[in-house]
Length: 416
Image (cartoon, rainbow, N blue to C red; front, side, top):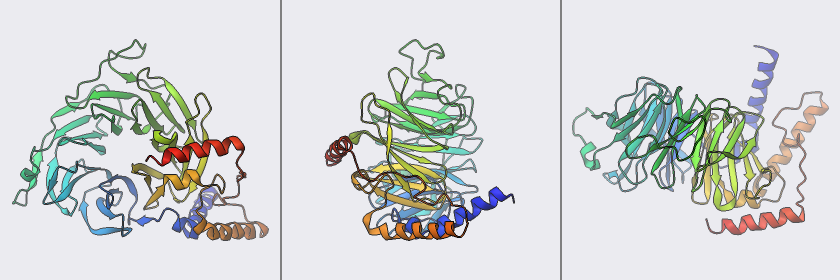
């Protein structure tokens, strides 16, 4: 092991022992690396774990239930069907994995597979469920997007035999993407499905038919269909999120980009120092959240017309890469390779006045202990690690203009 690798390992071990990071965001410990998750309701979430299983997290008890859906490889993706599509009073979830399988199961009985979606020839990378219809979308390392129609009645999944129902894809979309599909997202109307991945292009499909959306403008690189070609993003796109009039992407090229859906031009570019794995726009308050390699979550103020976006808050909680961000009412959740799912109140974070780094008052004493410990190590001649929250100095005092912007954001948050 090289000296750099040894130092990185020591830093990670120190972060894991940091009492502040152990408390921030009220972590649920999953017992496996969380690669993806989906919120089921205010009480539960479905976690896709690198430990070859999908678990159900109890968001109130802050723990994972014991039973799990088992896969033959890392579980990369999770989805939950609409609240009206239930079986025996239970929501229905799906999980996809490196074993090329997509399993359908009841949230209250994850060990029993109700159905198998059969068709992908390589790792399943992402899943999305339609918000009102029994339709599921999947993306794979086999460079295809598949659309699946579940039975109109969920009771038809309740097969009394031990053999789950096998369902073939309704539509296979292939030939336009030239690389693995890492991410899928429906627009707010659920009429358009967006896809992207290792070819760094973004494409749009009719969510019901799977046909490519026709181009409404002349763009040199398009092929008659709606397309944002590789170029602005240089490499892998890991996440897509949509709002009413914009589309956001997160990439390994260290940027998150906000796109105008009509013009397909980049409106805002958020530049980072490392890979951006996930993005979460919250347009009601003019904020965009990004999750990065190394575990830092950033909140960007994007509400100023024509202004350069700026970081208004940093959250140093996860001790490994942030993998997924999802909104649920006035809170958002984050997951990481540190095996935790954490919850954040957006109003508390935006309204925080203690500086750019978010540390709620009830945990401030842990930060002081951490800072004191880092100072002691520096006096002993040790190198300062990246868990020293004071290494980048930010004034906690807000300017008059910043106070006004904060007041406006807080007013908007009351409507969430």
